[in-house]
Image 1 (cartoon, one colour):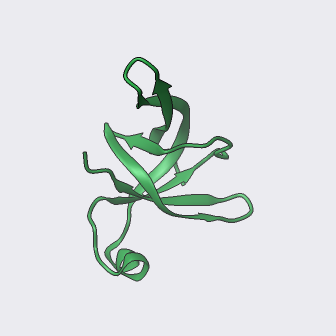
Image 2 (cartoon, helix red, strand yellow; image 1 turned 90 degrees about the vertical axis):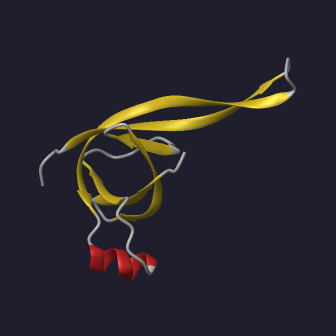
Length: 100
């Protein structure tokens, strides 16, 4: 496995704003991790989710993710976690793009 991307991880924080009496959502950068990123195959996508979605990727980080995160960014596209697998030293994430 080789490093294909450096992936940015972000956390959405809700902060109460007393001036507007509402909660503001701030995106906080929590880490940049070297990862191997590939597209999720057609057969595997159908096995896991029952349908094929072109906007899903498999992310295999080379470091432990010892922080909480809400979404990650690959090539200026936001992705959220759909499922994950963690073994002894290897972990992988299946992520899907966020429609905004």
